[in-house]
Length: 193
Image: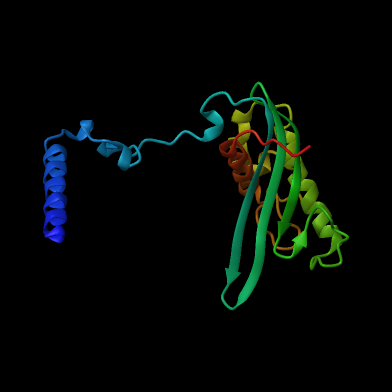
């Protein structure tokens, strides 16, 4: 008897709930999302975070972390961590907390765990520093300029491109750009003091 009564009550609740929701218009339903939003604006460009308005003043910290692999070998972790102060949407006191690729630490070229030559790591660190120097004192909206590192970092080899000294790979400026965007997405960072 108790099981039948419980079952009947549950059926009644289900019927009432379905009746209420099937009678609602889509815009009246909770959490209803218009179709065009689900399709990400159907061809409309997404505005990068750095151009979406004003940010609160304060210290920001963000990272780009990825796990790279080639078939059969572990390439290690690619990592960039930036730290900067934002005041009136202008970037100040920007620096790297971490700048590494695979097993090499660009910020500590003398580290005995590094696999690449010290001179190469120093050259790469210098090129990456030029990216941050470009941002220092500028409005955060210029961040997109990092898509073109050749316009920012010095061409030390005279080739017309900013290159890694041993692989001829393009300077990894997109990782820096994404680390700064991560910081903006995270909001003001309040360190333990």
